[in-house]
Amino acid sequence: MTTAFHRPRDAAEALALLEGTGRLPLGGGTQLNSSESRSLRYEAVALEGLLPRGIGRAGTALSIGASTTFQDILDSKEAPFALKEAARGMADRNIRNRATVGGNLGADKSCSSLVPALLALDARLTLLDGRSLRLEKWLELAPGRQGRSVIASVVLEPRKGLRAGYARWSRVACDIAILGAAAAFFDQDGIVRGLRLALGGVAAHARRFPALEAAFEGKVLPTREGIEGLVSGGDPSGHPYVSPIDDLRASAAFKRSRIASLVADAFANAYVGEANAYVGEANAYVGDAGSHDDEAQR
Ligand SMILES: Cc1cc2nc3c(=O)[nH]c(=O)nc-3n(C[C@H](O)[C@H](O)[C@H](O)COP(=O)(O)OP(=O)(O)OC[C@H]3O[C@@H](n4cnc5c(N)ncnc54)[C@H](O)[C@@H]3O)c2cc1C
Image (cartoon, rainbow, N blue to C red; front, top):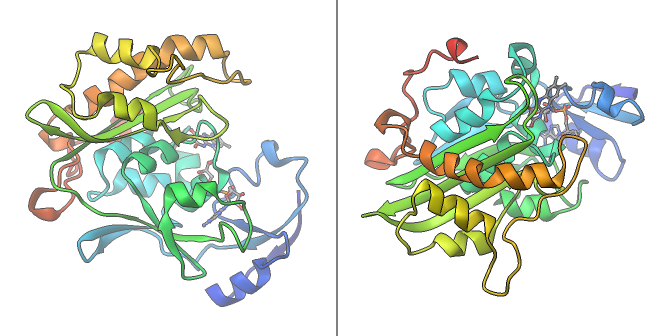
């Protein structure tokens, strides 16, 4: 429940309103104004109009403003394919029109749509207080002014030849994901290099799985069956690579039975076709260049 609503005129005023006060930044409000936040009493500091919105080049990098909505990502010709696929999973167009990139990272849900994809793509964040840090470092910080602060934009550095794929599993197309998987890697004559693998829905928050990444590194990319076998197995000391949590969306047993084939899907989706690859041709992103009819996909 919103107990007070602040509309700062600029970023400095927003920071002053948020600093050490326990007030919450308000993006699109699709989580803060939802029934999920019913028991929360908070003062909202509106970010609308203060943070960049849209996706564009910043030098060689791609900059995604924190106020960019999920629909903006889908409509963009610049967004990497894996990020579009992640955004496509969001409920319906009404929610996609409101939900922002900053709000999705701020919500930091286990089953977040964007966190796995942005972790795999090695996103860097620019914060309203001027800091710049990698997404995975930001996720390790506690919420609050001295910790996470407000995200102003997400920056992706194109890397020539990088392939990235995303896959999700939900009960029905418009439901929030129960599981999500994103993989980004280089295919060097069939050998996997520099794999970043992030999973959602298996832990309290979406995160990378370094031991599993290492199991693929420097080896021939396995067949689908091989990928599933690897993901279902364990590290050299016998610990399972992935031990999913039980939550209200699905049991750990169910998630265990699905996650391996979802990871295989994420790898496969990184090869869906040239137009879909996340490649750094001429040091630039190649999105899907409008090859999708986004509405027809839903
Ligand atoms: C019907 C429905 C379906 C949904 N489906 C999905 C789904 O498929 N996948 C998914 O991931 N989520 C889903 N959600 C949850 C939610 O909508 C998303 O997480 C959304 O991206 C939140 O963005 P927002 O801008 O609306 O955030 P808000 O509700 O405004 O804020 C969410 C949190 O982020 C913080 N915040 C906002 N902006 C920033 C910023 N710039 N920097 C730092 N912190 C910030 C807020 O203080 C708050 O803690 C769904 C919600 C609904 C109601």
